[in-house]
Image 1: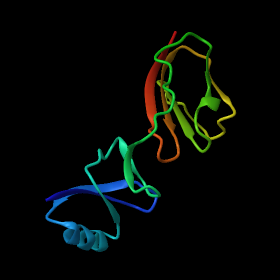
Image 2 (image 1 turned 180 degrees about the horizontal axis):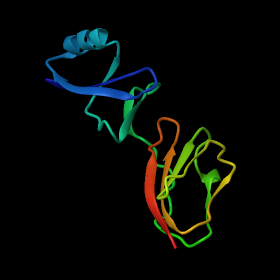
Image 3 (image 1 turned 60 degrees about the vertical axis):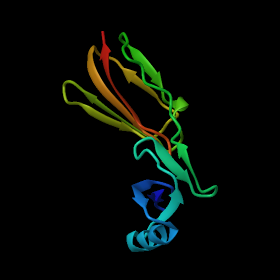
Image 4 (image 1 turned 90 degrees about the vertical axis):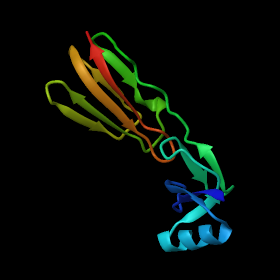
Length: 132
């Protein structure tokens, strides 16, 4: 028996399986339209480096502040280019920012749900931030 991880061309993990042998892995990959590497990955935390053919942990990005005071400024330049930041206030106001050269300014008190969706393979972050 062998553990195998199936992935797409970018390295996103699609499925993990325990199969009898390499022939079964090849047949399953062909049926799924996927590639495979030996080993067992964590679907949420890993990706496949398609050049090296290895399972690696997805890189983390900086965390968001857990709380703050008005005005709370969050420097978005620390996040990878191509990231998208989504903000939802408790009042229901929504904002999306794709220019990581900007600063996110939370100017009123309340709860803000802030999510950073970076390009693959980075891991996203989300935080509910109370601002006093």
